[in-house]
Length: 201
Image (cartoon, rainbow, N blue to C red):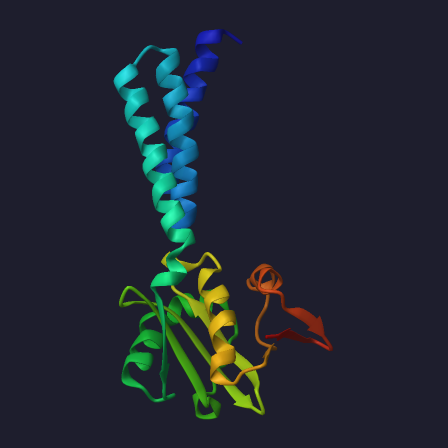
């Protein structure tokens, strides 16, 4: 294979990654993939001596890194709001994200009449997540633990694990759909016991 063809392939690879990044709903993944694509394209630009293009792409990498660091620390901007099961804004969120919730948790059944703990997590006033469950004796049986697409990076889960003990919750249990949820449960420290995922706080 000719060197010129290899160089062109590097340029195409960088371009494809930059474009693919903008198809992602997760802000974190978008910026990571965009950074990789921009870095590859910057190297390509240096090879062909297109220095303005190289400088622009290196700057994009730095900008992405800056925002990724901010996203890593965005837990400082989260706010936990306790609401009732029939809260109008909660109903709006559940209806607005119903299709995505059903996609994330195929076959989910939310018996809202059984919910006695409902939490909305906001990030700088924007709704970012919802947790619904039934609590008894400090044990919360989770019916829904949902993050909106832009905040699906586990930071809301970490925030909830830190805040829920303040609400008198010592143990979390989850027995809902897990086919798209196992990796998240593992990252959050849940352990499978007798068919139920459990996490002590």
